[in-house]
Length: 256
View 1 (spheres, rainbow, N blue to C red):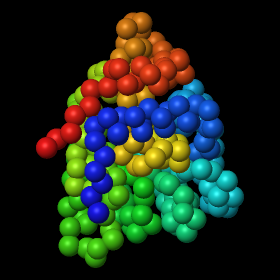
View 2: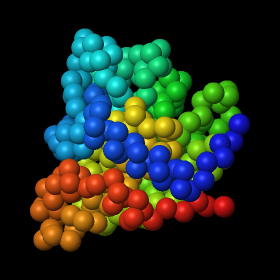
View 3: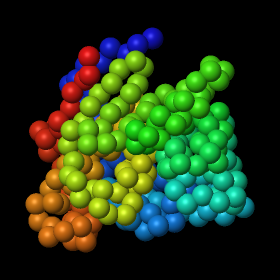
View 4: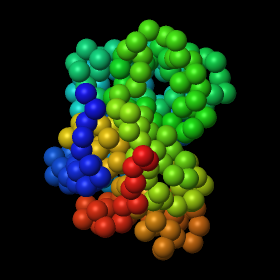
């Protein structure tokens, strides 16, 4: 059944999720890009969450089972990582536990695309991708059996899009320096996973992460001299941002 919540309902739920994460925290196990691990961990800590990062398949069940949410990011893919990711995805499906899929560069590699499709059978809560990656996945799953869809999809770009239950929300906050630093998107995905464990619904979790990172980026750009100082300032602004500011600054519209 199509949900009937309105613009203010979604924004309020997103802001409440940020406040809840600040108070209650969340543990996120991150199976992610090797070049993104440090920044992802630091951003989660700045937001009030707790990261874990092991990729060893022998430990994945132990760590993922103790997490509140899991990030699966295909950034630096190899057979060992693929095995660990599938173990974690299966555990999340069985638990159930929210996990976010980020099919990085799947439009460039049939291996990545096919692996992303395989992970869809474990029902990720959210898939976060850019438009090219989203197109590669949607084309590949066309004609496959029902149940291979994605409950909530986030497509990033100059305007970010949240797709859920036949509706599309657009978020116009952000700063172009986010594309000039390593791991901003990967870390945003981890934050989205954390918020999925505390939010009222998946669109609210997605919106909360987009606003938190993008409004913080706008603030950080006001003091930074370039991408290097911007990256450090972004962590500070993630840490300092108050939920009420997100309510005031959000550039949110529904595409009708």
